[in-house]
Amino acid sequence: MDLLPLGDFQRCVARYRGDYKVQRFSSLDQFLCLAFAQLTCCESLRDIEACLRAQSSKLYHMGIRGSVTRTTLAYANEHRDWRIFADFAQGLIQMARGLYQHEPLAVELDEAVYAFDSTTIDLCLTLFPWAQFRRRKSAVKLHTLLDLRGSIPISVYVTGGQVHDVKLLDQLLPQAGAFYLLDRGYIDFARLYVFTQACAFFVTRAKENMPFYRRQSSPIDRSTGLRSDQKIRLTGPKTSHLYPDLLRRIHYCDRQKELPLIFLTNNCFLPALIITQLYRSRWQVELFFRWIKQHLRIKAFYGTSQNAVKTQVWVAISTYLLVLIMKKQLGLDLSPYQILQILRVTIFEKRPILRAFSDFDDQHPKDDARMQLPLFDL
Image (tube, rainbow, N blue to C red; front, side, top):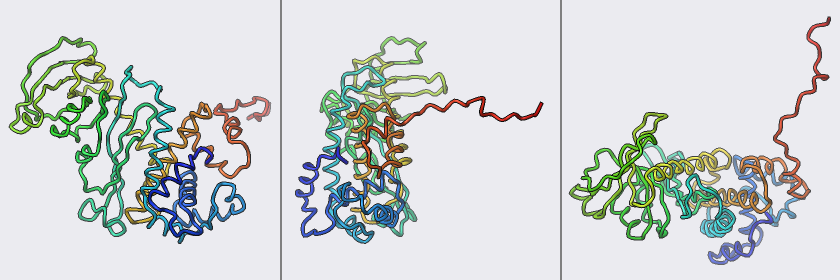
């Protein structure tokens, strides 16, 4: 928690008047309790209350000044503005991006590379009626723009499951010269043309029934898996007007799975094989979703309102970012998973944090043959 920029947090609280008429349980207390729940995987507000009260003598030194009760925490999650934690997470994002700006990519590129995708979290319709997804089912979608240098979530949009993924492209502000890796579900040529007008590049997969005609073909090396590299123009009655410029169509065959893949991009300068390798790195956003679902408390929520859900999501993102920041600032040669597990079992120990990580040894101890008992008496 020493890594928290408390000045920035208090400015976010003042911006939305989070501590207006609050006497005992401040916004910082709420953030620390929810961050503790993320680090220790508490399943409910009762778990948070029981665990923190068991260590009541140490809470003051952790920064928690107010009395922790489940009713107080539930009320804060329901009524305290979630934008406090969203704005604070944006400050942590800028800190993390500064630390990871020189991280290597799977493809040698100097430009920024982002992957945009969403994941769905199933919910109960009775408890979450505002997020109705199907006739008898609710769901929440996390639409995430991930910076592939360090796997840092740049933007996270929390919506109900009924919101289509492609509509969230309207929320993005394309960065000139950057690459955006999109799944096939984001094909909307009017919205993709916005990337071209902003001098940004996109890479996505083409649909099978897309009408076009070929303008030019470039030579390829078929031994690499490439089958064609073409410049095309759309000929559909609507798509030809929605995207009037040329597109690049690359046909690639995955030799391991014998799977034909067709990519679309508005970049005509990079080699075709680099474009295919660039799209393969989009899988990092799927790994990010899997990681936070497995190791953070984000598949079940402590409150049922939209404000409580968004608050918990942004605190989880902030916890993930704090782990990444600590990994860089302390120079730890450990994975985020290992760091999280060590924090989980040493969270209340009074010793320097570097010592907790320096004592970690991932080598399996060697068995001493002299300690092995004989199986048979000779």
